[in-house]
Image (cartoon, rainbow over the protein chains, first blue to last red):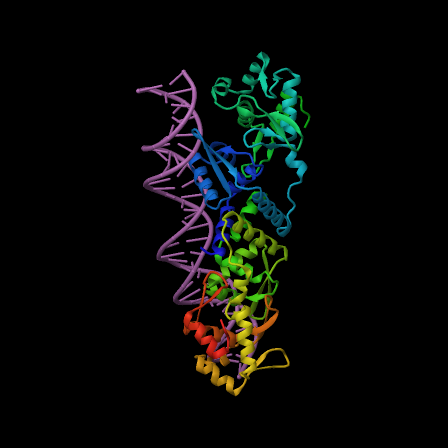
Amino acid sequence: MTAIHRMAKMAGAMASPARLKMLEFLADGVARSATDLAILADVQANTATTHLQVLLKVDLIKVKKQGRYRFFQIRDEVVGDMLEVLGEQVAYLSHTQIPPQTEIAFARSCYDHIAGWLGVNITHSLIVNRYLEEQTNGNYSLTANGETFFSDLGVDLHKVKKSRRQFARACCDWTENKNHLGGALGAALMGSLQNRQWIRKNPDYREIFITKKGKQGLADYFDLNL
Amino acid sequence: MTAIHRMAKMAGAMASPARLKMLEFLADGVARSATDLAILADVQANTATTHLQVLLKVDLIKVKKQGRYRFFQIRDEVVGDMLEVLGEQVAYLSHTQIPPQTEIAFARSCYDHIAGWLGVNITHSLIVNRYLEEQTNGNYSLTANGETFFSDLGVDLHKVKKSRRQFARACCDWTENKNHLGGALGAALMGSLQNRQWIRKNPDYREIFITKKGKQGLADYFDLNL
DNA sequence: GTCATACTTCGATGAAGTCCGAATTGTTAG
DNA sequence: CTAACAATTCGGACTTCATCGAAGTATGAC
């Protein structure tokens, strides 16, 4: 195996949207489970496994086993450099205007729940309407009114509560520097809004599009003027 | 086409040893013909064409048509950065010791002729022994003694002279900053030394290995102490 | 123990990539 | 015009890749 061969393998490991999404997501250094990464990359769990094996083989990521979980983590911060350089080159060489930061920041997903301006403001609305309450540990709890509200929206609260995931996590968004609703409830909410066709998620990126129907619905339910 | 997709395409363009060899070779900014690049990458001309199309599509290289030639050139110096970063990551992440610069500089090929310390010193020997003479245009011409000498080594001078390539080019080596013999004659010389099994070329990289037999032969014919 | 969950392995399939030989197009030299 | 050469296109054989469903392994909850 020569240097050239190794370089080709390394480049090959990054030559897949699914793997790039995983890497980008892991770039912050936080370890995530295989399932999370599968959801993020929008593939089945077994497909995610093979992608993760590819990344492991070229040492871009490392893995910690913890009980029945396997947590994957970026191998080294320098990996972020490579992603950055790659991204810059693409922006520069294909002289494409990358969608401006503001647009993505407006409505984006934090892999399975709504982040960005939209996520922050939905969460804010839930709190001022007393559907959610902030707990001392920083996370949220659902009020009685909240139960009705979420059920109205089509969220299967029974299923959400049964999930092993953190129920209603407060997730901090770097673009807004404010919290938004994550965890099992956040994911279920996003699922419902997608079912209602209020939002549509770009499968390739973290953008969220709001439909015409969604504009109305979001205004009615969350007091949002879009 | 999203940013992630573009990044994947870009990485994919570099995920082939043949294309990486071409890119590395072109990194100096000099434009080369498709045939030269095919020889370098050790593939047929038509295969080289498809590789070059891939590189063109992601804008890593550009092309100038000149008569029946098509000269390919790195699109921008920044491409070199990406290769460097990729190389560094590979060296770092796969904790492999890349052969030290001095070793490659010692004996390397300039795709089809001998460069590096070895190339420079062979050429020097050819000149002091008056087998080659430096011309005013910077290139070389063969003396009567030179004809005998090269024929002795097994070079088919008839065939070399018939080639449309520049006969005996003076090629400048960046590691030595001195000229070495290129062109049709330089290529034929390297071919003969390979036939005699004095040198062996690593097919994947630009390294040249000198065999035991080669050590003796190079000492006898070129006054080189190895 | 039983069941749900997290993850992997296996097998199949369709898509894409690599490569070559042969034929084709276009250009230059004589 | 013809021959040689540079490069491409075409058709194929072959390999690798991405993906999924189904089945299997391991772990934790009760």
